[in-house]
Length: 454
Image (cartoon, rainbow, N blue to C red; front, side, top):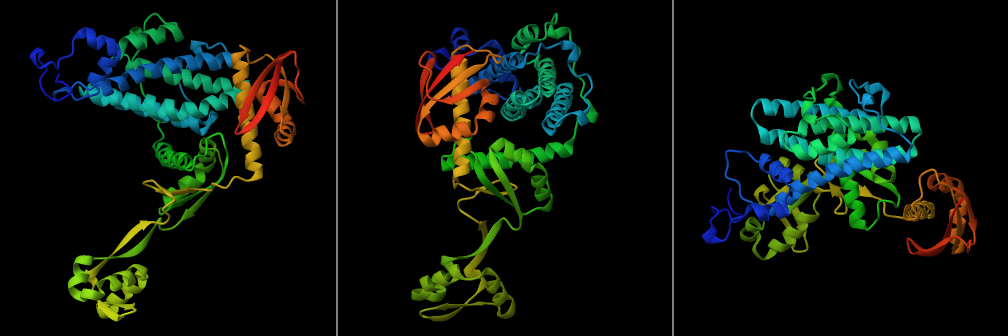
């Protein structure tokens, strides 16, 4: 173990970490996870930021356990460990469940093979990538919403998949994080000990490499769209009318076409438009080091002419005569090929690039989109009030609204959908002065609502 500056730790240098100080900034499991994430034959500098990241993995596990309990309670489901999936019938599940089970089994395969080869860091890093990137940041983001919006039978299926994936992950991760894995296992799965469980075996039939590749492509475009939204200052809960994805590969094109509804759902985009073509355009770039000696005082004029030239015409001129004729105010000049280069650049500087293509979103907010955004925001704020009131999912409420005519009309015009989403039996104009009254800011629109439990 080296100090953070890369030198050996010594008391007289003041760069050593005492055990007491270490325990104040890291749990034992986080330290163990961090150490095991690095190849064991290389001296390891002590890096606090990396330790915090490892601690974040442990926190994520407890958050997932809480999420399982919270969403099970929300739909009135009592988990039964006998329903953990021994075999996974992909045909009975949506594409997200098929993908996460494929990724789980691919990860267990990688972890098992790495440990058998004494490659602890390979195993641990595969586990970290799966639980953070695949499971927590990607899959659960969609699963939470689908649980609340689905019929109970379908919501239960999703929770059972979550519990199965989490259970198998904990068993595989137990050698790296023994205390957290045991603690969560005892609380969530009620077993005697996680270390008495069989090592999870990967199911070859559940591994779908084609689907994993398709989800990798989809994930890249989802990230690009989300980045474009952030750059444009459009919150995720505000719908976007259209996103244009331009790709240069037919297989990528087919994948985006196939996965477009999933991309739309993850990014809150109404319509994904896919275009096939060269995702970059060519431009002629002058080589000034060559132009100066060749054209002296006319070099800048020739350079400007080259910048405006059609790359195809330039290429055709070189093929036919060995040079390109640049027309300027000072006359025509024969430009040899070494005086310029033809490069490709992104089609649109406003587009967001990925390794598979470019993305551009439509930032125009129509009246219809604005109405939908206000409804989503109103629902979100009512749900927050319900939570603050300590109401359960089954509790019904009555809502009164005092706001601008525009907002009142939008809410009342969408009252059926809103009532179903927030568990309300009634939404009316005006306030019930005997009920709980809250002042709200609905995306810049001032409003007051009354909430009464029935």
